[in-house]
Image (cartoon, rainbow, N blue to C red):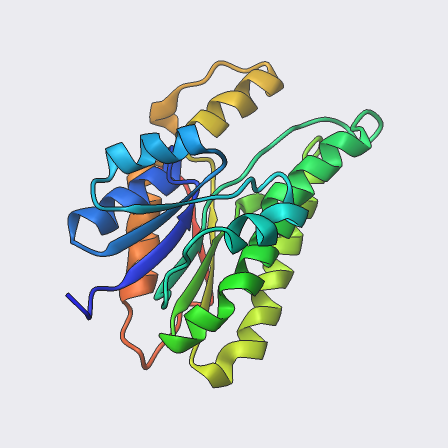
Length: 232
């Protein structure tokens, strides 16, 4: 089907990214899934039959251009969905440059670089760039400085991109989920020294519903910022 939308997705291995990829895969959209290495790419290809993969380590933004230069990129990108992320909590008095750098590279610099490299294909399709941000992209709490800084930066990236690409017909959405039941949330609870109860937090499927809603909105409108909070 020539009209089948094609989406490039990061973070499709778990949590919100897996839920979004599954939703789009089930309805027959084309998927191009970004994986950090060849083994992960094989796992994703097996989980989502028919999906293509691109291998690029988001933890090394300087090499993404080189990595993608050796692989076949899609000719058009209808949805560029930045969902991958990392978190490492700690007080400002203890966080090292390594912890800061890793979160800034994966959560902010890699999305910026992937967007730069794929923007021509997004423009071709008058496509949609979605940044799955975080409540921490709007408010920074104690011990969340590096993660929140990366997510505040991601909001700035989205806002600038939206202003720059509006005339090209490219839509840009930031989604700010509250705490979501995912492997990342389990890690956060461990770092906080708290017991993790998945049922207390947002189901990744609920965030996926919000993302797909933004993608499917008729062309006369655009969701700029969407905050999703726990309902219980």
